[in-house]
Every structure is written in C-alpha cells, then in structure tokens.
Image (cartoon, rainbow, N blue to C red; front, side, top):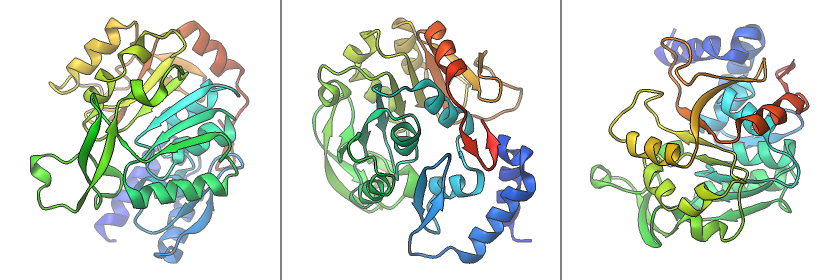
Length: 296
C-alpha cells in the first residue's frame, strides 16, 4: 500500500470521529481518492452545512474524511457561539470555521483570507451555504501594523506572510491591517487565529480586543502543541496577562480540561478561555451537531 494511503489511514483511525465510525470514514476516504478531481464539487460537512472541495485541498479534504477535521476546536466553536455573537476567523482559508460559525451557530463572522484564489474559494463556500448576510469577508493580511506585505500563494493551507526562507516561492503583495483596525468598536465573542507562525504579531495588534470582556475565548494555532517553544511564550504571556488560561475541550462530554491533554497527543491549536463559567453554560446548553451520523 502506498505510504500516503497508510498515513491517511492512521490519521483517520486516530481521529475521535474515525475511532467511532472507522468503516464509514475509511469508505469516505476511498470514495474520495477514487472520484475526486481538479474541479470542485459539493460535499457534506457537519449538520446541514456543505463545502466545495477538490483534490489536494488539505483542510477541506480532512472534513470530507472526518466531518470535523479539527474535531475539538471546531465543535467548541459551534457549541460556544450563539445567534448574534461575532466570530473572528483570522486565516480563514476556504472557510471551514466560517461556515460552522455562520451556518450552524447562526453567528456573524468577520473572515480574513489574504490569498486571492483562496479568498474566492471562501466566497464560494459562503454563497453555497447561504450565509453572505452574516459574513464580512476581508482579503487582507493581519499583523501588528498596517501597510502592505508580501504573502506566499502556492502553499495551500500554510500560506503566510513571506519570510527569508520563502524567496523562491510564488508571492503577491496584499494589504495588511491589525485586529484593532479590523474590528473597530465591535467586540468578537470568539477568535480563531491560524496564521502560520505570525500569531504573536496578530495578538500584539489586538490589545484593545483582549481587554474587552466580551471576548470569551480564542483558538490559537501554535503548531508545536502544548510544548512551550520560544515562539509561543510571548503569546502565552500576553494572553495570561489579560486573564486567559489554556484548556482543552471534550465535545463528547461538553467539558473543559487541563491544557496538557493526554500523554503523547499532538495538538495544533491551543484553546484560551477567559469566562469559563459562561462558556461551560454555553457548551452544556448547545444543541448537538450531526457529524458522520454521530451526535456531537
């Protein structure tokens, strides 16, 4: 069996949904591998949401296989948000979190995606799910300053503000702003920040938002999981100074736990909570999400 197929199988069977629906998920993997092409097609997502997917789109393909690719974090966003809340999807890519927040939770969304081609895929998924009236799309990069930056455009889900190691990559110039300028006087209830190593600069440009009690939690990509790397320490200090504490979320039990998680578990994102009591009430009372025939 090819190495790629083995890796996909291990990933699927180690995923919380894959462990409970192994045959269904493996069947969906096989069907996708046999039928997917370069042209996008509509695929089921979670609940009544749908996505446009094509071969090679890493994040969207994970949702095809498993329903919720980033299981705990995606379930948390849907369980914690309410109609009328404002969700910030910073580094939205093709729009998985945007669709979950606006379609399933009925929240308003500010979605940020700087890469032109990816922003068009995001726009198409917004239209497909009938949520254009609840989503504000910005084709900009986000950092701790305004201006213009060079941005990679050929790296799928890991496109980023270009650094010294990206000299040979395809790039384009994009406008750059801060979360403070982007949100103005509006206060998001939740923020999801996935900007491929630029998280610290994004959070540095969001000090007003961090002070606003209306911001209950953040989902922040750290890449290295819960290990404290030199890059993640300033981000952690800044969030802790504003009253946020790291946690993990168990969607099956609707409970928060210690941030370390099970031994050996690798997590891309860290969940930061401020008003834990309010969030516990919200996730406990949220209706279930139907994912691969399971009620989450």
